[in-house]
Length: 379
Image 1 (tube, one colour):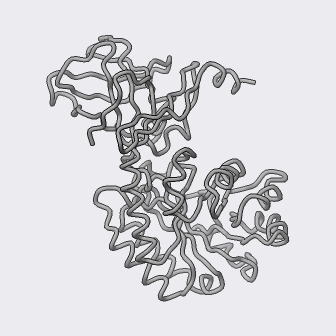
Image 2 (image 1 turned 30 degrees about the horizontal axis):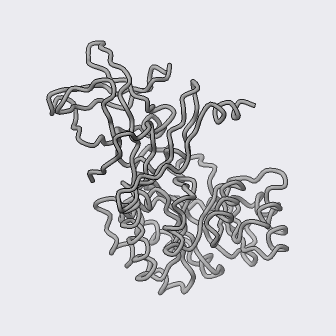
Image 3 (image 1 turned 90 degrees about the horizontal axis):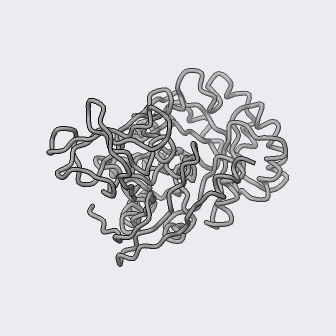
């Protein structure tokens, strides 16, 4: 992709590429159509209400990790709302019965507390099962829902303590950035190991982590696995991708604001790994930069770092065909997933604008942030 941004764009800015989002949505709608399943947007990975109208016709609703995300899905997306949390705070389930259509619980203890409230309100009840299937392709145990001692889901040891006569949805989220082998493997694993329980519910939710728009993902393999599962069990199937819907659909546009040298040349940006792209440090990974290469490939190599006081606020090392200088623009790719839903104002670092690059080339700023946004968070 070679996006064209206005010369006077204010940085830093997260920019959604609308054309790219529509291409990714086409993958989801194909899976829905050919496999006969329902697909939800996992708002924990990406939530941009200004773009929800683009997704609304193609998806079946949203899935949330708590009350606030669920409320946003209800008010801004307006279709099915599913919600899961490993535990709910006081009064949260009762409030969710006025927001969510489907409420998932994590354990025998949690479902015993919340099921009467959910059923009395006419909501469908789900239970998250830890299927013991590990296929997280990034981050190791940090992002593996089935890692040893994970707090997510009821284990096989406790599964028979659950009130299966009152459970509507079997939920098995075990993936993170998985290609089709992981997706198909999970589906086959659940079918093979949990068939008696699947025959007692209305639906199964295979969670997120299906990286359906990542280059190399075999969509046909996923569709075949879903069709075989539905043929065997005859129940509704949900998928809830988040990052998989927004892979490579946007950018973080930044500007060089200073230069330094310490053994190597360093460019300091108005964008920050620590505050604006936390997964760079948590996973960790090195994001792509448009027009740049790995260090020493092109003529001018730089370490790119943020302006915070955190020593480790380093995005990576890259090379460029021309030397960087204050005012040079640096554009990071694949910056929609887990970026602005996780960012912070550490050090008083300004939050980037939220913007959309429309198909006709129009650049629309959806929201800007200033001092008051920083100050409000501090009480």
